[in-house]
Image (cartoon, rainbow over all chains, first blue to last red; front, side, top):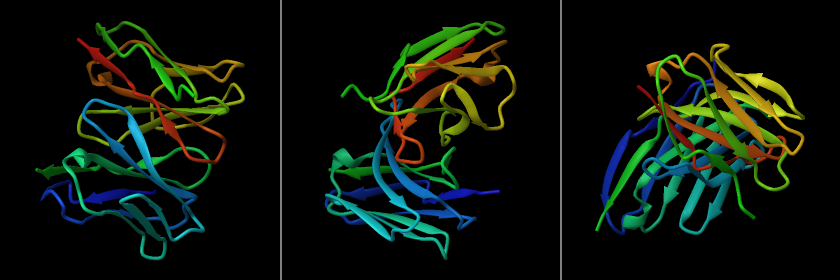
Length: 111
Length: 111
């Protein structure tokens, strides 16, 4: 049974810092992995999608990597800003159907 | 492009009642998935609809049922509501096997 874990559960950093959020999974047979951002009480905003055959994806200040052999993905945020404060969720699918989510990392960037 | 839309935004129901939530997928998408997100948790997969059929189901009781219409929009029905059904219900649409896009969610409160 696939399990997804995100560490740390919460993170508080000063503005301008570079930071790394971690996502680990127990079964390497994945189809794709997607990182989302969620603001309090809101829906999910897709940040980056990594297909199984890819190692990383980049969008602006965000970079996500995928290492299936070690069961890990990381989301790197460069030069963090107060507007980056949110909960970050990773989710993966082992086929074309359901996503399995981690419990998220709550990020607070202090001005 | 309107993206994924959900209605209503908020809903308050009494234990034992029935509720229907609605979702319109992103233009061009043919697959709709429903998730339940309890406070402080990651979303949990309820089921997915494709070509008006339930394609996969998560670990939810039969009180949860759904429907997909020919225009790809979808409904989630929950019967005999329990206090534990209080959550944010998220709808996601995709083109089969590709990136999922989430709606803003419906906040259901059961009293």
